[in-house]
Image (cartoon, rainbow over all chains, first blue to last red; front, side):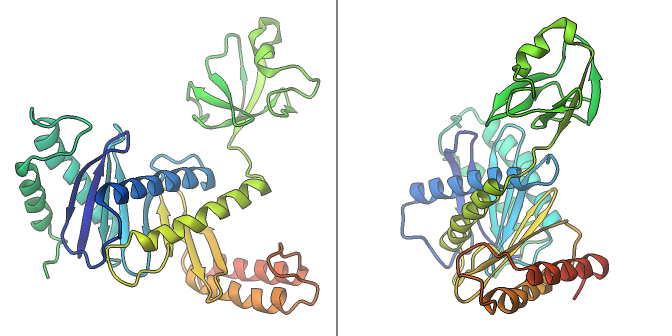
Length: 145
Length: 188
């Protein structure tokens, strides 16, 4: 699986963290604007899905696919949002496990438990970044290229 | 989900978006987000009973209990369908803009925990959107078939004007045949 990039948003829509692995196309706007646009899109998608669903749904929007990439969405009970862009082939259940693993083993351990990390602000901790990259790259679905 | 309730009502209701919805007190199959559809067999009109009384006042009075309440998911109106379809257009385009890779199309497939949405765009920008069960296969073939039916029974129809809703019997009949076939066999 090729991983393109990862965004982490808090419950208010603030971008807490961004990392990119393989990205061949950038938008013409600043990182903050792009994050706001992405958050707005996810917010609209969630409400769209909620309205369209035939039965009351528990998790709602999970992912969407285009011809070039798949956007995977994971939201915790505390409304923390993880957005991961990958290629179109990888199994969704494995990506979901990866995302829940990132939340459980990296975010909770190195961001929530860190006294230096301020809620609502960008995570600047280097330890967080290195542990995250290590976790993702050691996952059995990651493909290095 | 129809049940008889006694005073006091332990389900908390609120009036939102012109509908009486369940805000708190999820139990026995009645979930948060469900709408109050009928009271004692009489359907509700916004927040009023057919005789004009406000349903919240009605449910405050002890002598009106025990009362039979029917809850369910709100039916989607035609207007709402138009709104949702229009909402899909910009989301489709945003997917192209936010793509991390070159040459991306718009949203082709959208997965949730209760349904799957597939879309296909023609060269002229007409979009076909199918909402289906997660396990339904062959939707791509269905989308192609629908494009074929659109070309044959809508575009070639002398009484059909572009950009207007399609009201052709032949289109709907053949569409139903295609859908039945896909549901039964999984391919066309």
